[in-house]
Length: 299
Ligand code: ADP
Image (cartoon, rainbow, N blue to C red; front, top):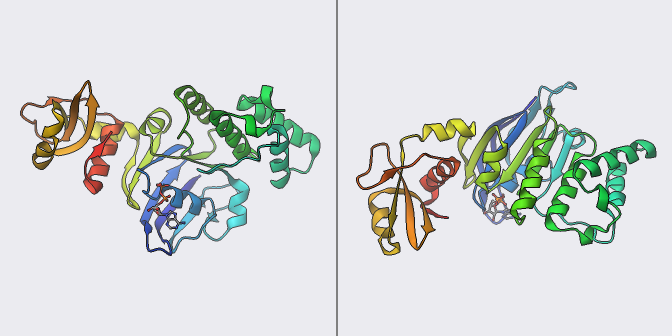
């Protein structure tokens, strides 16, 4: 089972080219789609979730027991297999989590009330909201709302789950809880995690892509992408006033303020005088690929 996206393009009516021919193969498991704000992640996710049209290109869901699906035209069939947690996730404030999940399960075609009850109770336990199931959604914290969002996305045992920027705005403990929950989702599922937070992908994903300005700029296994950078990242602490001079000479991939000084990370295939070698991580991969397109990123 995999999702095969080829040459997907989208230009909005205001002229913004959000997707410029995106091609990606997304296998089973947790797939991280990483990119800065405005990269085109949501545009891609909404297209795969059948919520908006692409101008050109194709997206196929292959290897399903019921046969391949054309995601762009067989929308109803795709929706039956889909669980979606959108970026903007509104809840009805005066409805309890339990009543809302029951309602969504009905909409997803689970007609038998006993079966529905079992599914809803099971999901509430899975996302750790069982104790607060009778509370109105309006009283939930950000993290609780996100976990509720996952519960609603899981109704109907979807084969494809899309979560768009799920941890933005969550505190570290809530984010951790959310990561644990995502990592428990079944193995026979494709989970696409769209995010601008590198740590989300480092912790969770076995495959990933980086997109920037509507184009794929890297794909692969996160560890492999990091390994490719071994011996090519160098660091140096400089005064803030010196940064621009360094930028003119070196390929600076990120700058980070540390203890009053600025720590530069530079990309170079050969050692740089006065710089120290760095063991690269996924942030270095991300910033290298992004700066190649957009210039230096300040963390
Ligand atoms: P991301 O999810 O990576 O932040 P988006 O897909 O939301 O990126 O946006 C990609 C680009 O398309 C941005 O420049 C954004 O302003 C623009 N955009 C997104 N949605 C619309 C829309 N409905 N109409 C016009 N422009 C849009």
